[in-house]
Length: 433
Image 1 (tube, rainbow, N blue to C red):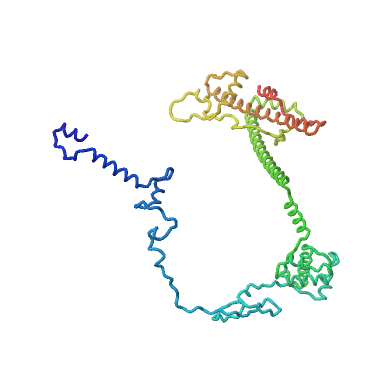
Image 2: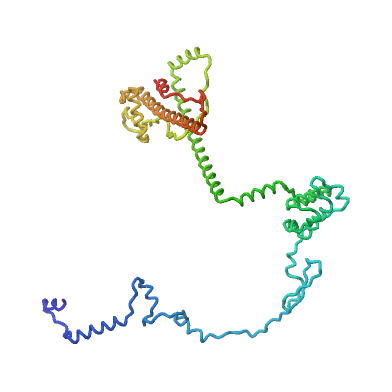
């Protein structure tokens, strides 16, 4: 290609050797020998890993890692042992005694000759509990107990074991002489010991100096029985217990959800009462209430708590809160009747159906009084729709519970008290009209 460019531009060509058949075959032979001696990377092996296995000379990797192969040193042959010139310290087989033993037993162990200490190094861990003692007079005056059938011989044997084994009651129960003193459990030994200690401390006026331990043997027996029952449970019992625990958690979650929904329903009812009270403050309503009050002899108050179980009720914000147009600039009064943007599509559809049901003009003249009354009317309609939904859900839940009771108890019928029977939806419609 470069030769053709040089010919076109009339440039001098470089003196290159002429390619002949022999020179061409010699070049191919050298390339073949170079590729033949080169090691090929196995298929599937990464190039970086293959480069770690071979050196620049393409030698095979060593079977064992050596300092020579790693380039750290010249190998282990030149390493010399450096031995110290100090004398070894002498040891001797020396006798020793344990101060915690009373039988004057002598033991032996190895120790350095330079170590002149004769005390046993582990003697500092020998700690013995202080077990109280009593005399015959103290026993007859304070410790005689015929309720638990403990004699003085048995009590003496108990305190002797307590001193020997440092209140290890499991070992004491094992070493208890059953042939002479009868069988005693660990709980009985503990109960008698701590009872005697408390009585002696009370007799010697030592209750303020040290704390008196009170042992409840009956509680300990029940605890061990429960622990044994828990240990001997079968796999089916464990699975049943886990299932019951999960069911209990679900019941607690449903209970909390119903309580929350009951509170929401209470808020909805209280808001409806407040709106009714606000509507009753008008002059015509007050005159009507005065006449109605004269006719009524007794008026039952509204219950403050919902007794029926509320389930699956979705209650959002009750009513509609219209924003006041207090911004700067010119605005139309008809904008006051525009629904807020935060109202969902479900409430909008329910409001349109209520307006058609009560035959109300959806676009009345936007006078000041009409705007206020129309907004209050639509807010009451939304509240009415929510009350209808809550009431229908309560009725459905009550009927469902009734059917469940009749299915669980064949031959029995659940009679709902008249005070718990909810008002029909038609009655709400008539009261609204």
